[in-house]
Amino acid sequence: MHPALQGILTIAFGVGGCVGYFYISNIILDHLIFPARGKHIARNIRRANIIRPWLFLLPAMLALGLYLAYPVVETLRLSLTERLPGGGSAFVGLDNYKQMLGEDKFWEALKNNFLWLLVVPAGSTAFGLLAAQLTDRIAWGNVAKSLIFMPMAISFVGAAVIWKLVYDARPPGAEQIGVLNAIYVYFGGSEAQQWLTIPFWNSIFLMIVLIWIQTGFAMVILSAALRGVPEETIEAAIVDGANPFQIFFRIKMPQIMGTIVVVWTTITIVVLKVFDIVFAMTNGQWETQVLANYMFDKLFRANDWGVGSASAMVIMLLVSPILIWNVRNARREMR
Image (cartoon, rainbow, N blue to C red):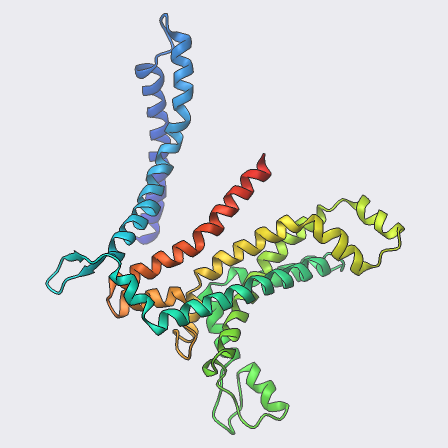
């Protein structure tokens, strides 16, 4: 069967199955379980209306349980077991976590993740806020916003390939095709630098890629927030003699601080799961290891499912508090 036809049939059966489920389940509920007739008609209608929302939620709950809850439980189980050479597994308790904590690569990954957490959310939010403020003040702001947002349409691997060419280094005497080395050599550098092999600075160069991608996201959200600032407060500040910097930092920023925090935490979650950029550009070499890449190495290269699952649980533990805070904050705003 042609893949396109197979895709169309899959969509048709999926949509048709959902429609059929909701239609049939409502018929069963209204005509068999709680029929709207007889002396208990009012009670049946009331009970049916109580159950009906759960009928709509059931497929989503099953899907979430299958694709989210089950993998978490299974990963936790694997992190407490060890695979035996002949097949099967044995319970080892916290031995995998002890082994993981005893490896230098894990601490290197953890240190780099915290460095990413310090730099990328701050850089992306700051540049996004700056872009949002400036593009709203120029005639061709929408064109500028489109160009700044465009990296969001590129996959992380695609962005890594682009920036790997930017950091590319050719032998001495050869023409440099890497933009960074071309500039470096043009302004008097002795020879091209292998930027991605220089410890600490190579992590900064990798972070620039994610900042480049996430700035567009931050700009769009913060631009909408800035446009929601009441004009009356800005006009009052102008009447009182405030300059543009005072208006921005003392009038606008306090009023959009909630949006800034949401953008910051959203990018923080992305940073904690960063994998593609590191994998495609350095593969964790030269002291650029991060937790997700460490997990990948353990699971699919070392074939150590115990330690790999333990590192996955560490990532989940780091992400969970931020997710919970975001959900609680969103509910508070809805109220």
